[in-house]
Amino acid sequence: MSALRWAAALGNADWHLCAPLLVALAAAWHTDIATVTTGVAAYSLGQGLALPLWGWLADRYGPGCSLRTGLVVAAAASVGSALCPGPGWWVALRTAAGAGFATVTPSVSLYFETLRPAPARQRAFAALTTVTAASALASPLLADTALSIGSWRPAFAVIALLTVVTVWRIGAVCPHPLPAAPPARGRAPASGPGPEPLPATRARPDPAPLPAAYAYATVLGLGAAEGTVMLGLPSLLAPALATTGAATATSAVLVSYALGVLGSTLVLRRHARLWRPARLLATGGTLGAGGAVLAALVPGAAVLMVCAALLGTAWGYLHTTLQTWLPRLFPPSARARAASLFSAAAILASSATVAVTTSLLQEGRHTVVFATGAALCAALTCWTLLVARRRWR
Image (cartoon, rainbow, N blue to C red; front, side, top):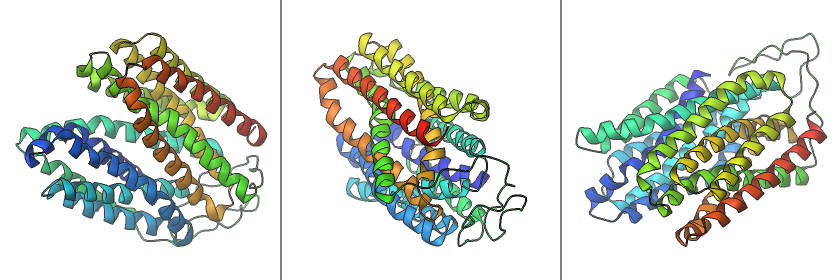
């Protein structure tokens, strides 16, 4: 499990590492920041497009094969980023890095499917989210350390080195860690190569998988809705600060969001044992909608920091619950694909949301953007509660 958390943390750190280095990159290549920022968008695009491929590979050949292959691609792209000669190569290499680290989501999800009962899976996802939030806080420190020694290149070299070490730690490639069917009562799960499953406990069995068309529509729809709200709104906080004349508080808002994620996932390890999925989803959705309403009604740097903390807390409750339960809409042979399609829809929807709404913020339509976000968050919460009450009581 520690190697899986390392892989997730490195992918998140690599994604957050670029923003603090944009000025240094633009100066090194004698170009503008907008050109260099294209690499950040390319990273998300590569990640979103590669996720379905990694999900299929994890289902077909096992998560060990998918995870190690993707991390090798990511390590090579990070080495290339450290040696990158110009902005053209930069965009291509950032796309490759995003595509490589995309393997983490379906592979980790498939490994966590060995955990029973469902609260154990959710606590594992909460612990993973805690680690990734901590890596987001550590990325600016790595960037500042690299710049203090006179170059941005060592930051990506460190990511590459740690990724290679993680590949080595993951262990032997396994065909598939999950049994084809739940083990009989009183018997241990089937043994085999790969991660050791936890002993099965008495728990209510999951409902039968949904028809394929309905399951795919639900996963893609919920992924797009969550990405629009839970990823899109936090990405709009920095542009919103710029419109209020408080651009210098951007780092504080990002820290507030990360601290919200950290705090919620730490508390969630207890709540996952005691609360039903519907209550967890309702808590996360209410906090997210409340933060968006607050940002819509009372603009200002201090309020946006509170909004960031609320959105981070909402992410911890809402996202880990959906991570835990949504793959169960599919049969065991397609659950990595379910996780990858959910994440791909979320990433691509959030990118589209930021592209569409940033211009609205620049026009001063701050209230419209965040009020719409609050309404969408409320709709997402109602949809998830409907699914949860029907299937996961």
